[in-house]
Amino acid sequence: MPRADHAPAITACTVTSALGVGCAAHREALAAGRGGLRPNDFTRTPLACWIGRVAGLEDVSLPPPLARFDSRTHRLAWRALHADGFDAAVAAARARHGPARIACVLGTSTSSIGATEEAYTRLRQGRMPDDLRRREIHHPHALAAFVSAALQLDGPALTVSTACSSSAKVFAAGARLLRHGLADAVLVGGADSLCGSTLFGFNALELIAPEPCRPFDRARRGLSIGEGAGFALLERAAAASHAPRLLGCGESSDAHHLSAPHPQGLGARLAITAALTAAGLTPRDVDYLNLHGTASPQNDAVEATLVGALFPRALRASSSKGATGHTLGAAGIIEAVITLLALEHGLVPGTHGCRDPEPAIAAQLALAPESRPLRVALSASFGFGGSNACLAFARAEAA
Image 1: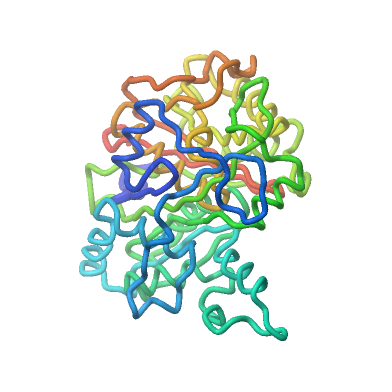
Image 2 (image 1 turned 90 degrees about the horizontal axis):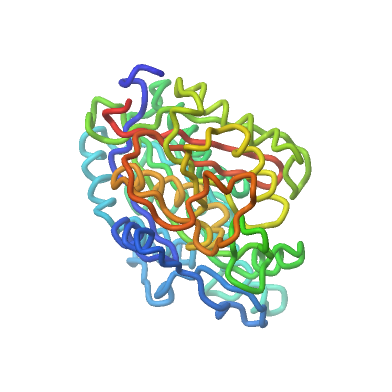
C-alpha cells in the first residue's frame, strides 16, 4: 500500500441527483432503499421511459455576474456547489492556498448541449435567439469555466469528456496535479443534465427501458437516464489527517467497440487491477464495490462475470443507478460520493430494482441496504469506446 501521506485526502464532497440535494439526502434514501426515478415528463416529444430528474432546476437563478453561463447543467452544478457547505470549504482552501493554486478538473458528457438544442429549435433566419446567443454555454469546456468563475479559482481548469467514465477519471488527473506540485488543492467532479440528445440517442441504440431500470436483474430491459452533479476537494493528506483517502486510480482504454464492452471485460479488468495495484491492495482487501451496473443486457452480463471471477464471495457490491438513473458524465462523481458515504456510515447500498440477479454475481450483490463496517471500497465506471476507470478509497485509519 502506498505511504498514507502520498494518498490525497478528500476534504469535502457534495452530491445532487434525483435522490435529492446533498449528502444527507442521499444517505437517507440509500439507507431506506428509496429510488428517485419517475415517468418521463421532460421531453416535449413523448418517450415512454423513466428518468432521474432533479426537481426544481427551472426555479434556480444564477447571480447576475454569472447570468451569461445560465443553462440547465450550470443550474444543476450551482445547486450542488451550494450544498453540504462545499462552497465554504472551497473558499477556506482558496484562503489557505491562493486561487491560483487550486485546479478545477471536471467531467461531463454533454456539457450544456440542452441549451444548444433549444437554440436550434428557435432559429430565425439561421440565427440563434438573442437570449441563447452566448458563447459561454455552447462548448465542451463550459462547465469548468463556469465553476472556476463561480468559485473564483485561477488555477488550471481542465475538462474530461470520456463518456460515462468522465467524472471518475478526474480523480486520477487531480491526483497527478497534486503529486507533481502543479496545484495544492484540486476541485474534481462533474455534471450532466437531461436533454433530448441523450434520451433519444440512447433510445435509438435500443438501450432505454420502458420501465424503471433493474441493474443486474436477469429480466432487465435497459437503462434509465438521469441527471446530477457532484464535486470533491482533493488536498494533500497533511491538510486533513482524518479525511478519507484516494488510495489509487486505474484507467484503461480497450477501444473494442464504439458502444459495446469488450466481451471478456478486458478494459474493465485492466482498470480494476490497475487501481488495486496503485493502492497496494488485493481483491480480498476490498469490502465494497460500487458497480457500473447500467442495466443494459450486455454491459451487466460482462461486468457480472468479471466481478464474480475476480473478487471473493465475501465482497459486497451494488449498483446505485437503479436509484439515480444513469447520469452519464456525472455518474463517476455521483457514485464516488456514494462510495465515500458508504465508507463513512458503514452502509452498503442496495441494488434498487434488482430482484433476480445474474448468477455470476448473485452471491456478492446486495439487493437491499446492509449495515456493516467498511474500510476499503472501489467505484468502477466504464464508458463508451472502452474508456474505463476505477477508484480505490479508504477510511483514513485504513490508509
